[in-house]
Image 1 (cartoon, protein in one colour):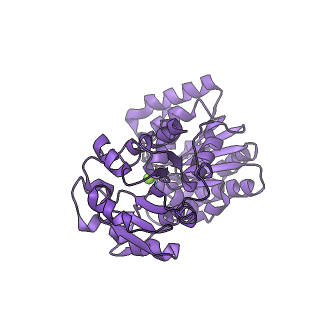
Image 2: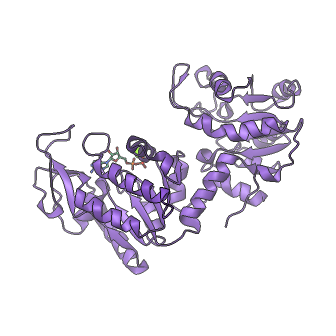
Image 3: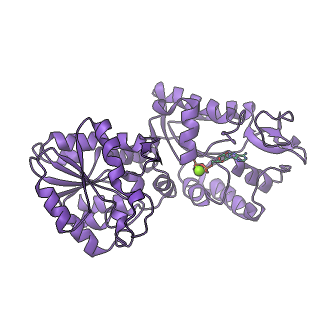
Length: 402
Ligand code: ADP
Ligand code: MG
């Protein structure tokens, strides 16, 4: 089990201690309005706990892609009001994330105060993991807490470099995420099933390659299942597929066979002649009966039922990628049905279910089951890199500090 220090390893009284907390303030905005505050909510437990313990809480984050330039439209000052409203406390803004002016501003803060430092990416050294910038940021604090799993796949000054310069701890959201991921793939209860879906094999090859040797059941859905079906000699009509990856698909089958992993492909599918909401040409058929002018847009009900039976016999599920073109009705049916089964099994206590990925989170929200999964990661790129078995530099730095 990977180990790292958490807020439990800090003293209960942090009065006046300057705690630099790496958070992820990258929320979607429409003008000054935050359109999805999930990430702001996620950091609240850490921020409020540190503030309650008397720390001077200094939030570090990137925001957008300013590429080393100061850009008013990418200033973290835009997040002061939204965060203050959610936290129910006042939040101040500090005009740089390093340097003497920031240091001076911080000397006027009182125990329990919360401040947002300016966008770390206004300095070109952030994305280069420049040791000088890391040192200058570290000089503003006594302790470093990383609560941004979603930024941990980047070795940047505020995620990696700084963790070696101060006592470093995982925040509450980071710790919860790492614990859930460890339960899902690090040291899972068997049997383990993985659902991998989405449009393309090409974006998920590394994920498939990593999972195939670790899970007992690999369930392939979405557009990428078409490439696997084609590799098996099935005529998938005009379905989305990647002809140049048939060899890679074969390779996955071979590795699965060698590892004793069962690969599940659909027997029945939902097809249509045109990709549109509720098209008149909609029908369900066996995978061997797809016509030349039809495309596969979702798994069929028999496939979903068979997959539900697989999940009933598993103890752990990790899920990335929708099973169909879920944004367009009715091609969300398989994803919604299987997600509901996974949610019910989780609630019954028979399944640990962990899911992630931008579209996967949207699909689970659409199914109304996000709360019923064991853990749903909103981390995007970091979650995928973890699914690929890669070491996340921001996490590795916390482990080295432990
Ligand atoms: P995530 O963001 O969760 O990692 P992906 O980006 O890999 O997921 O895949 C999601 C996309 O895959 C969705 O836009 C969905 O419409 C598309 N998709 C799934 N199945 C099909 C299909 N059979 N044909 C076309 N697109 C599909
Ligand atoms: Mg996506």
